[in-house]
Image (cartoon, rainbow, N blue to C red; front, top):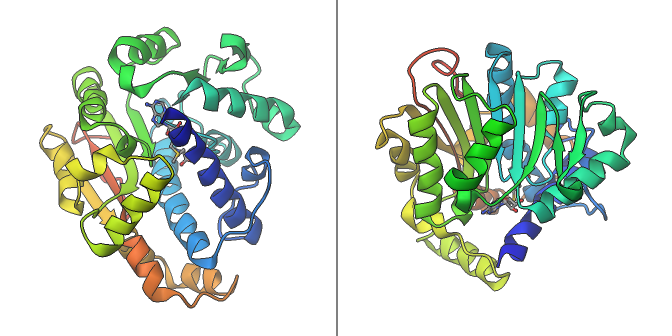
Length: 309
Ligand code: SAM
């Protein structure tokens, strides 16, 4: 079960590499995290572009507004966000990435193999936990199980420098939805209690109950994957309500179809010139089953005013 969910990090990395190689997204680092590059279908590349740009926009806004803040990427998989922030020249005070040890070990090995990535690691980086973790004053790759967040991960993050008093952005890109609601709620409840100025950006599946949604769930189940959170937060509204119910501010939620439709026309024209895409009906259906949410605990800087549109 855990092995199946860990393997999704490779799928996400493969899609990112395909979209980067074709020019949909500007990510020169994605290639270091794939073993066998595979070109994805045009509609997947389109979806990856929206997913990538939606998350990176929030990360870039936060890093710009809160250079003294922190980022915590939950279930970071093989994502490249830290390296992209380094390339932009806007890194927050501390950046943490969390995933299962099996995944962080793979990530740490890929980073150590690629001189381009090694060069972007802080000079004080040390390899820890038998190769599964990287520690430094400003960047840490941490192995752990999000289902044991409060008792295991939260104290270890704090021992590694996480300061709950600083503005902190938590990122969940297709992660919390894999946890039982009791476990993902425990993560959010810890943040609500411990971090007075926190923001969360998520990108996850929604709408399991229509025909497409049922097929999506069946398809994942056939691969041994269960989206436990999907049934607890099935709609766009419920995804945002989850934060409002905890007293958080300005929970914005928008599905990927809406996000893609609101992209700058020049950007859409650029994407259209990359490859022919004629599966619009299928794209819209797919994109209606993924959504972003953004919410924050305090109605103050740096989060107030952040968002997509
Ligand atoms: N966020 C990354 C991205 O977008 O490329 C990876 C997404 S992948 C679909 C889901 C990730 O969540 C996997 O790397 C998986 O190992 C991680 N994950 C799921 N459940 C977890 C748990 N209980 N503890 C730690 N990591 C977990």
